[in-house]
Amino acid sequence: MATDSVLPGATELREVCSLLGIDSGSARLLHQRSNAVYLLPDDELIVRMAPNTDVRRRRAETSIAVTRWLDTIRTDIALAPTHAPQPVVTDIAVATFWPYCPTPTQPGPDVLGELVQQLHGVLVPPFAMPRYRPLARLREALAIDGARRSPALDPVERAWLLERSESVVAEFTATRFPLGHGLIHSDVHAENVIRQGAQWKLIDWDGCCVGPRELDLVAMIPDHFHQPDSERKRFAEAYGRDLLDWAQWSMLQALIELHSLGSYIRRAPSAPMADAELHRRLHSLRTGNRSVVWNAVS
Image (tube, rainbow, N blue to C red):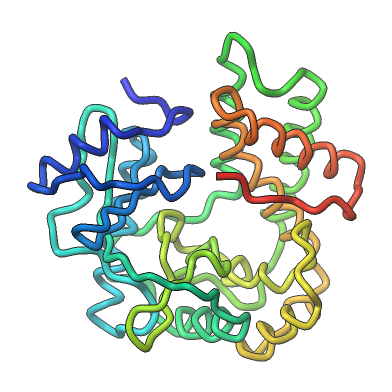
């Protein structure tokens, strides 16, 4: 049975591709984070694979439904999936297939701001949508780690994370969000934008849901990746609002940084680089050392 701590690999890729009559022989692994992402250059396809769990199936189903729906009302926000029946599910994996759009340069922060502004102008889809659950994925990762024979986190780290998470979630729950609730992407950053023809489009909709729109503006917040202030200002100008003018922006900063630990906790036992980055990030949060620059580890 699939577990959410082990990503599918080449064997599972061959199986999901065979169900669509696709040859995966030329496949190339692009990265492994919350999903295993493969390029099929011969077919100009991207395959995103996750373990076949209830949560991952629901996330994949939602990403397909939302991006196909967005493509029917306006074509300048989201990359639409291929026309094949999706998601593709096996005993081990759940997979989605997307057009391959080579994008040699990353979009500027103004592009991100414009895309989010356009998304926030869209109504909630006319079908059932998940609601945002603060730090749900982190709590799931902590439960997985707690059940391991050799957990990635020691008892002190685990206790601190649990206490800090409860505190941030309590603050989030008590917060009034000026921008209201609506359809959100929930993971807006430059790596989740590609260029299809003349248009920039958002990808990776696994976490899309109905939630506070401020969550899509966290690219404006000072973070451990040390994005220049000038880039944050360009994002804010393109969107039309600066999140730093809101008194409670630091709560979202804490929320997003804690959320980022979940995928590293899942992968730590089988990926030494992910384990090292997990403990670097956690130590910087526990000590309040914002000079530590975080790295994205595939």
